[in-house]
Length: 383
Ligand code: NDP
Ligand code: MG
Image 1 (cartoon, rainbow, N blue to C red):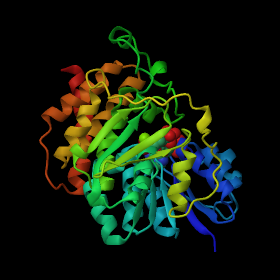
Image 2: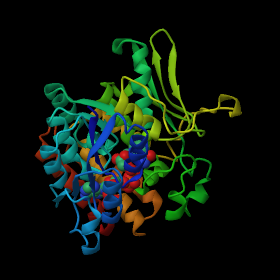
Image 3: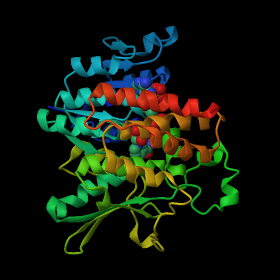
């Protein structure tokens, strides 16, 4: 019997990469559910191509001209709870959580509640609610396998030793498009500059997060939850070539790294097939074509967002929800042209600094903190 997979966020960059991988693995895997936000035309084309009969779309109703494009037997789940309803009603072996942002949290939580294997790209869910998701997975038997390239690399490298033997985890960072920009040049950053990532092709929100290095701050918190690390065990190293995807240093000084071309289809596929490995559609790395690989420490003065990742990883409680909510709100304002690039990290820092952190929060408290942070970012614009 083929394994059954549901893809949440199938129309996005990770979702499309996942379908590419699954087209190669179709003898072993079957797509039984797709979910998207509002790209009806894309999701209907995917449903036809992969003969998927359960589709969730959270925004809007199906346009008349697309109704006939879905397979005849298709069940459509609509509205804000559509993804959770689909998960409840469609049995599967793996859920790919690839919705961007806090919008993916409720469905990720439900996938974990149902004890599924979760191939997790939606890092924001862990940043907000890692304190709930990780213990919940232990209770339900759900397995969370990271899709994020750095965390996939760490997950793979950790197989070389025992958890108690880990000294440091090094998360690599490309440094983003502004790595070599001077302070003066950074004053003139425009949206289109921030959307031009030097090595990875990704959706707009994570591309902007990479430009501020907030993405790495979120990944520090993600690593803290996924691997149960203390913040001081997590280090960031800038590696512009994006070939070494991360490293684990064990207590004997051995460092184990995972290398590959910067193509998300490799970690997506590994999250599906783990513990097995299959041939992958991504291009193999040609070691002899690499002239040199560079590694250097991050510039925390020019990229202040990084500090916030450590602060939140140490503080826990509702601070992750605040970091993420404030960042999502600030990124939206930057995309609308309301604030400058530099205001993104500044706004998040300001909001975090006035937040009264709740220790051991409930889901309701985390969601309230998320809403408060978003509101606070906008309120501060006029104060
Ligand atoms: P994209 O912007 O390309 O895609 C986002 C997906 O989320 C789309 O399918 C979109 O649907 C869906 N979506 C958005 N809002 C909703 C909603 N309210 N309900 C249901 N679906 C919704 O993002 P990426 O693929 O780049 O990123 C996805 C996640 O993976 C993020 O958390 C990101 O941090 C993480 N990630 C991405 C990497 C990458 O290379 N892209 C690398 C590592 C991690 P629609 O378009 O139809 O509205
Ligand atoms: Mg990453």
